[in-house]
Image (spheres, rainbow, N blue to C red):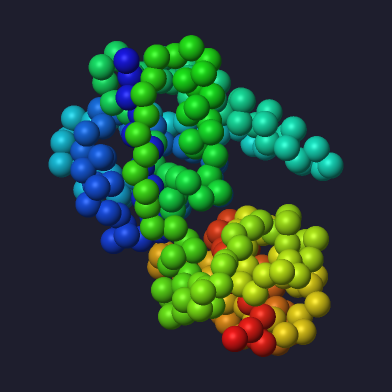
Length: 253
């Protein structure tokens, strides 16, 4: 039996690593490091820096995992994502089989928390379902949502009220009429700029936890153009961007 440790490594700062995550790292014989090309080289380097800082056993190995690009979703979003996950699972299965002996432990380092808008858990489940004898354990991490709230010094929720976590694709359908506080992730199209801004405020952050971190907040009508400008400049400068934000009604109690 092979064992895979799925370890949340935080949103971008090595200081966000939990003690539990560090101990899990030190049980791994092989670290499987996803590689999404040069545009994400900084993220790959940060994973490597985390390993160098926290792993006490110099005998571990790293194995790169080339992640295939996802096709344009179009109208069949779920079908495209399902196919993409299947292709990634095939690569993981081949690498687990070739690089990890029975009785050994491998680790996957996941940005933020593995349970929040990340596909690793579903992909490892696919690998196990394909017939490879595999056990896996999950270690939570600090998510970008937590860092966002901390940096802006705000609670995510109103008193006794819920918070909706959603995606830019969903937000593009409109601000949910039955919600006051909405956290938005995976918004490459800046759906907030297409909403009626009346009565809404935004708390936005990019590269959270990293030296490049950017924070902006204010009434959506006033700050949306500024976010679009800053976001475009940062993406051009770094070649990639990861951002998230909280939208909420200003009139809520």
